[in-house]
Length: 123
Image 1 (cartoon, rainbow, N blue to C red):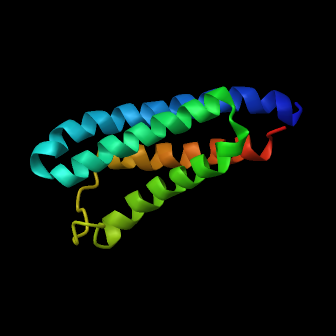
Image 2 (spheres, one colour):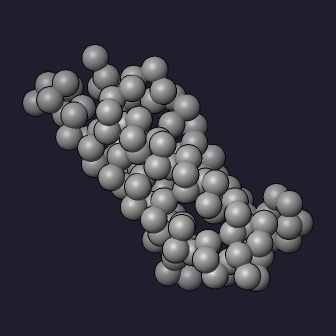
């Protein structure tokens, strides 16, 4: 299969996965707004950015693939870092490792792989 035939379906898969990621984080933000408002607000802003990234992949705006990949890496690194070291702004590590954290971790890795392949196989 040529790289151009691989690119289009992966763009759609990556875009949909980024939108699923955003929906999950919108859902999580509702409970966080009550307990940790700054984290809940961050989740909302980050979800909007992920929706934009998903649209970028689906539409195929090749000039914005690198910023989209950077966003995906930033989310992955922030999730990983905030479980070990003090979370930015909060100053403490986030102790919760639950099904949402594990699911997001796996989703982040898949999104990074798909976005990287989309970038590498672009026309």
